[in-house]
Image 1 (cartoon, chains in turn blue, brown, yellow):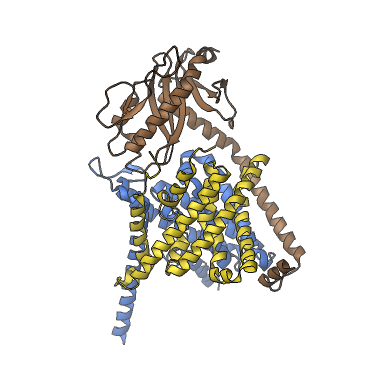
Image 2 (tube, chains in turn blue, purple, green):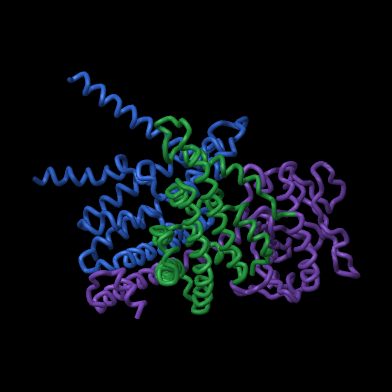
Length: 214
Length: 231
Length: 194
């Protein structure tokens, strides 16, 4: 009994990382995904801030889910989310001004990241605190992975470096287009394409196996 | 009347208004408390960070400086020592060596390139020239316009850029100007980066505006600024 | 105070720093409702309207917050103002023009989570725009959003007729198109500079 429930918990956690990855599968939270991923450092900073807001607000939403009347629930969620975003805003400023400047207004815009409000409404408002936090961590990690995937490709091709460490030597002519906005669109498009190719291949193989077994 | 009917239409079976208000108020109170706590907790660290960043930039472009004192120049040309954080003044930072002698003055300038630009440059009142330069904030296109922050040939322009003031009129003898790449002849000209002409020109404009406006005020209060370092 | 001219602010927010294609704001509706030209232009109209109203309101709120020394409440009060603006606009349109209300339909409430609206409010605060500049900026940003949406929907209507590989259908190909559009918009850079 307890084993199967802990299995389910792991399922909840893994769900956000792979099967329902917020960026690659659900295509949510596109704005920060594209805007701040021109370097791995910015991508990580954005990912960590979003995870913090996601986990804390999911926890609080799950705590108050039984006492909040249905009519004012969205307003309450937005209040809770913007509280944690404000906190993150000040914490980043206290930790590092250059990171704060690089992320700019996109920290404030975490408020309207649809992933957070989406998880509050779809999961945290219906589940226990423990499972809501698990779900938030899973989704957060999934979001971070997606950001680093994008930031990695863009920094590697656009600047020839990873996390600021040059990799290709002095003769590499950077592919600047990848640091520009259009590069963000291309990179994300390519990742989505890769994902759907993998899925298609899996589906085809599953169909083949079925045929063989019949 | 019609307002309330619209609302009633949007919310079919509303629970008592009191319970909604109570819940919203208590949630808002908790949120307010959290925000204020975070604000108070991070305030010191943020102020410290801002101060360190300015200090580091100032000491970087004034090599050899042991300490710096901020001044502000207001629109009328008056100089105040250590202006308030929200004062409407142009900020300058006087750098002094160990013995308290004035090494140079770091001056903040801002203006429009493709986007907003913020720079810091070092001015030497003794040599009447600009001898250091750093871009503080730059949102120019990566790989193109942002060459103004890194390209060595361009930055070499600011090792000794003439900004001599005419003693009679107190205005620059030769206003600083950006010229086409490869055509720099005189000490007050900035050699533009080919392919990033607009950003280079913006730097020239910012420097010209800033030197014309601030240098007379600085020269007028130079004794004051020198004395501040000795104290 | 920011001294940029009104014309420059307008061109800058409309074309050079187009909210969708250069600043990455409002990507969700950009990908979500750009399927048909008709819905795209309606969504655009709704966004322009909400942006103008909320820009004016947040300008006032910011003055109040600065006066009270309570800037730390900025994010929370902006989002509350925007959410209520959307609600009010919805009620107002419903009462005054039921036809327009039906035309905008589901798109009105969706605007609350459109980051472009909050983006306008944040940018006008960060850049220290005065009241007139803020209004011009929000108009430019809204029209820029609409322009991007309309162009995109035109392309996507054509794309539906062409032979796109299965795996690339939907968002992937839309993003590629957006990338090319964004490159095209880079050509506007420098319009306002001298």
